[in-house]
Image (cartoon, rainbow, N blue to C red; front, side):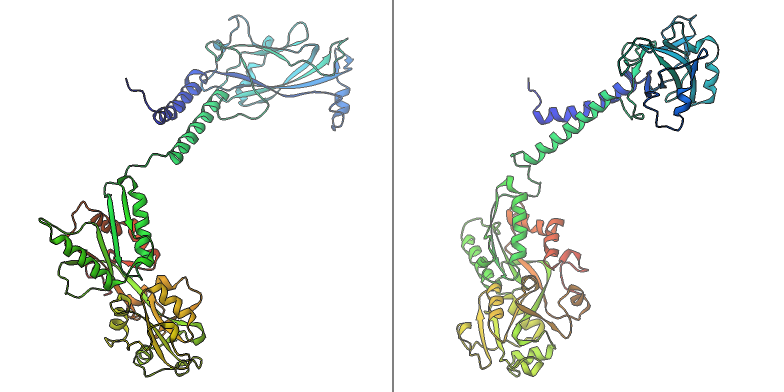
Length: 522
């Protein structure tokens, strides 16, 4: 026979405990319950500072002054959930007294009812059922009918028993009981605080519920067992290639996918943006990998590779299939010593055409312009040519290494990735470059350039006022198998978690545009 596990037992306890607490409070112990509270028990000496102290000292019993009076305020209440009637009291039917309160070592000088929760209760305190019993040390209380939460209060004046020298008196002794009452019908002693919402056993049950809940939470957050993978997870190793500008976005989504699909053994490489080779080289690598597999009999699309490209590739590789992922923003960046933070689009075209060679010609400092560009095949560079330069190619490099640029004249160099480009622009005086906005946002060592007075925003792109943008595409070699990790990761980018990652880097998911398959501003 299989026994439930520890987690199951904890869950069962968390259900059973509140049920038991409810049964205990409302059916076992709470139906009929009579209680009392001593709300005051003080001597005249202790009350000497009150305004009525003289009156207290002058009180008499049978014409003789009280020598050491004390005062007790007693509260009787129905603390259960059902009414108490005269037949419920555990005294003979011919005895009108329902409760007797004995005060050891004291005599009762007088009693008075000081408070009734319902005026109708006053009729119960007439005749021989209320007052001082023979022997002077006992108060008689009648069989009072009490609705749930109903109560009355009795003030008693007492005199010390001759020969009793102790400073304090023993607690009063209450003799009463109920038919079918809690604890065998015994009257319950209540503390002097106001009524609490549940009995102590019920509160203990509730505390146990809290303890069980804490235990469940602890087990949930500390268990070492991997959680079951979502239905859309796929295992295996996925190799990513392509855009260095879009790499941080893809890698963040890849990290979250791996964590989500850990149980399936999902692994995605590379894990560093520096290992991305650029859009053009990434497409070549994907095409080559697919070509090698195509030589095998029965080969289909690759299910373990994806390449991301800034913009749509040419048609020279017919087996590569594009899927639009997001609308991405790009920006021009300049070295801070240029003192230039905005350019018109025409000024940008003239700078790349070599017509403007010094920043002083566009309102900046007297510093030669140094163009730092990505190498051919870069999606960011292609986007610059298409969207900003109206198809005019950037000039050829004047040096092979950016560090060799002449500080006194206009020049141009090329680098292989976006991260290197940003570093070069930040350190080379007069440098101008281009980058994906998400990569440039965290850089305080360079300026992002406004184009025609417009900041790089998605709203500007959608309104047609900001020109430097591109659609990011994910390319596969052929149609990847539906159960492959490449297909699963593409679906992941299109769901809410993947879209959150895209948005966090300033991109607009294609699914949120009016024409998601085109993924361009209308």
